[in-house]
Image (tube, rainbow, N blue to C red):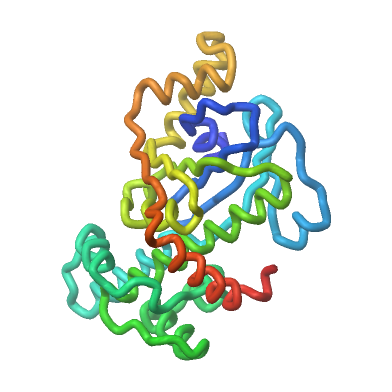
Length: 261
């Protein structure tokens, strides 16, 4: 089975069949979308570079590919090359202490696809766009995480535009769902609750779809109920007092992504 299709099957939503929830398969890439009974073939979906991928039981996954934790992974690789022994948990702790919403990048800018030095690429983007240049490990990682959260907000808005529905909750699954700082940033940026987990949604979805094919489970909704009852999901609520700052940051962020809109 396709890995993202399996991950979406493993999302522990109680709203199968509705488009009032979004999934975000978070890893090196972020894949964000909704599950729909029919494809969206609109001109607007094409303009925004959304795809319609096949899902379980003749559903469609209207989704957009977003750069994911590749930014942080490549920053860590560069830090290691300079002698740093900081792990991901250390980098997240440093990011949590760095000044908020100071510098932002468009995660999907071509300069971040495979640069020889990711910290240098982030700094160059900030310099080019007249922003403060992040210098420390914490500032660089915070810039990457906040920018990803703001991209999720942007894509959430596009999904609502394309479906005509309000999305009430975002489910984050996959390895990136372990990054609680990003989960919290996403909740506040999107102004929606974020439900994080399970980490192994792809493997779970794959196995349980096979169980469904054997007749032991009758529907996708029943499959997801098994996931819901078997794994803990962590909930992140938007931090209300920070929402005005994130809204202002999104205005700045949108200007960095003009070519996409």
